[in-house]
Amino acid sequence: MLSRDKRSWISLGILFTVLFLSLIAPLYASSIAHTDPFVSTLNATININGETKQVLEASTEGLGLGVTPIGPTWNPSAYFLGADNQGRDVAARLLYGGQNTLFIGSCAALLTISLSLLIGLIAGYRRGIVDSILSRMLDVIWAFPVYLLSISLSVVLLTSGLSLGFIHIGAGSIALPIFIIGIVYIPYVARPIRGQVLALREREFVRAAVGSGAKHSTIIFREILPNVMPSVLVFIPIMVALAMLTESALSFLSIGVQPPSASWGTIINDGLALLYTRPIVALAPGLMIVLTAASLNLYGDAVRDALDPKTRGRGDS
Amino acid sequence: MSRDVILSIKNLSKNYELSGAFTRGKDVVHAVENISLEIHEGETLGIVGESGCGKSTLGRMIVRLEDPTDGSIFFEGRDLAKESSRALRLIRKRLQMIFQDPYASLNPRRQIGKIVEEPLRIHGMGKQERRAIAIDLLKKVGLDENSYEKYPHEFSGGQRQRVVIARALSLNPKLVVADEPVSALDVSIQAQVLNLFKDIQRELGLTYVFIAHDLGVVRHVSDRIAVMYLGKIVELAPADDLYEKPAHPYTQALLSANPRMDESDSRVRIILTGDIPNPINRPDGCVFNPRCPKAADICRTTAPALLQIGTRQVACHFPD
Image (cartoon, rainbow over all chains, first blue to last red; front, side, top):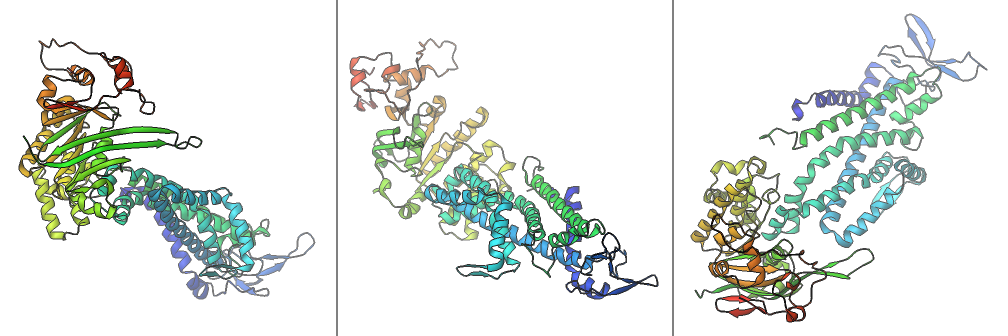
């Protein structure tokens, strides 16, 4: 059972902590850190232990070009994790970035799963020519490596935005990465669902429903869907993790979330230039990504085991 | 014994075209070939044969879970083979099927009660009424009221088959096709379920088409028995006549292979040589001729028709 599984408690604990911290980002920025994480503050100073310091100090090393932002103060009221090279509070940006990364990851995963369920049910149930057409369309997406396809789509759509029938996504909107990531993962979910539906369709309880005069909708929603749902539930946490990773990768390449908005990917990109002097800027979001993705995968494992009838105790369903 | 004909089959055939990537429509499997048959009201018609002889296909066509390639099935004055799927929905109330595998024929994610009353829901009956009927049916098949809320995995094979029977009875059918309903069960349970079949038939006046490969089981329940071989009926006779004096060589061989609980069993075993022929390349003439101990020249050229001889029908040039 899920409630008795230690893994599910640990992973849910981590996930809810991350979610909570992300949600209080505006509160943290305005009431605790007293900073606007989306505005460059090139000449700000702060007071640490009675000493006044530049947030962005001129670099003294090498040619003396560029700046070295202030390091972590470990004091929540001012630059807890230091500043990036535009003098913005990394801790506040990390929380705001979490909002974007988690939101895009979840929405993209839900988009993937709902479209995959639709395609899988139709293809598996109708079979024949409908199945062939849908499967070949999935193959087209499948033929591209996920990252290559999402990078190409992002590069193309980033400046122009997207107009597909009644869907209009503006350039630079966060709906764009949601849409792109949602699409590229569809074959990976739709194919196994289609396979399951194909197998379930031949089961005798489905024939019995046909023999009782059931309509197609009755058979799909009452006989087949309930048997597909467990694997769909298992897909959700895993797909959120994958979508989140893809989002971070796109944002790291500056083709996902657009500045001045933050995501964990963009913060890693900010930290790239400071890797030798202020490694925390890149490390902190990296750690958050690892922690969240690992928890989601752990939770996915726990869900899978809980839904597996072979490991489930008798009498509790 | 001249009872009303409830269902009559005329020249029914079912072909499956095997199509590979490069062999579209080349190979045709004749699963059922040109079968004509009448089923009388209130009787149990047993259908026996080896696996692959088309008996399940025939059963599924009778309830139109499989579309016939050719021929007609008359039930209540209508040809089922030609009805649209919309019209069939209403006819299906009176034609139900019981499947072989009680583990696969119940949706694992639904409660037993819901499974039993689902056919009633499909045909638009109210919730209270449905529940009452479902509980009644569960009692009738020997399960207690508490099973309504349970799930299939909580039951044994025999109990599940009782649930399947209850579901088949929920729409108050006239004809029930049972496709090897006990072959997946333990022998000790088989007898119980078979007796349940008989009790229910007596109580509700049902007509059964009972498909099986176990001759002992079929004899126990059937009034008449049809023996099938490679998609054709080779012999059709009242159960006792068939067992006492089988006329077709295939029936004789089949019966001699059936063990008896009798030490003085002095029958001569007829051992058939060779395998059942490939249904794609059927032998010319009588389909049984390559394995038949009596085969003569005429058997290799001309297929015998199913002819009436006394109480029975036999398709053989040299019946006993």
